[in-house]
Length: 311
View 1 (cartoon, rainbow, N blue to C red):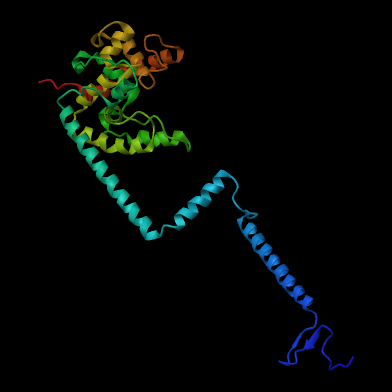
View 2 (view 1 turned 135 degrees about the vertical axis):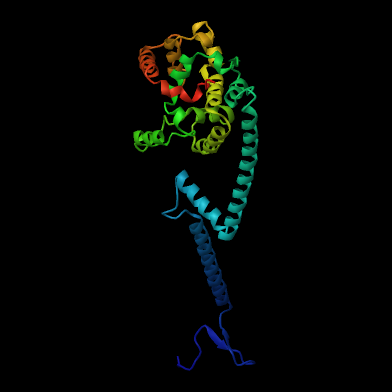
């Protein structure tokens, strides 16, 4: 065959002068190729879709990782100015709520300077929990001086020397904690603010609220009133509040006639009345009460701020 001749599968159309397939069946071959390439392209697209949907090798798998990934994606949708605006609004709302609450507390502190509180927050919480509350309010004169001395020496030895917070004891408690949560630095005034206006569970929020309330009580009430309120709202057993109810429940006598030993047992039970029974003390409670008795006997200065001045 001459090189100038068209290929065997092509011929020349005499009317147009263009080469056309010599065998019409050859046209069937080319569509098949196009279909095959189309199917291949489609299969590649599907593969890419599944590959993108499949988790990457380093994708988060655990709940913590998934939460962090969700948090990052959530924060990514919030720009910094918007977050700042929300933070400022939240701070303003919190400040308004605190100011309203503290205004009410200040009003109650002023009223309770002369009027005996009908109940404390702790009493209310226990009553809502179904506990029967036993309490009888008595003036400080109707409570044995033995209980005055033993409670002060057991709970707050510097009661007459500080303004609501014993900073030396706070530093000592921090050192004793050794990196944990400090304990044992609450003064009598701080316990009054907690029992009367706050809640019993330990938290830094409660402690932060306790400080301004404590200073307000110290500014408005004399020490004698602070001790009187404390001895009438302190819990000495489940649902037993106040020295009068405690004296009758544990020793079958009035608070005015408590002996030094009985007063020491009641004072030692105060931090944890659920486990320390003043009427039936265990060995540790009994030994601790003996120590408080000795301290109270040789520390008359501890009650100097609550004694009435003689005219």
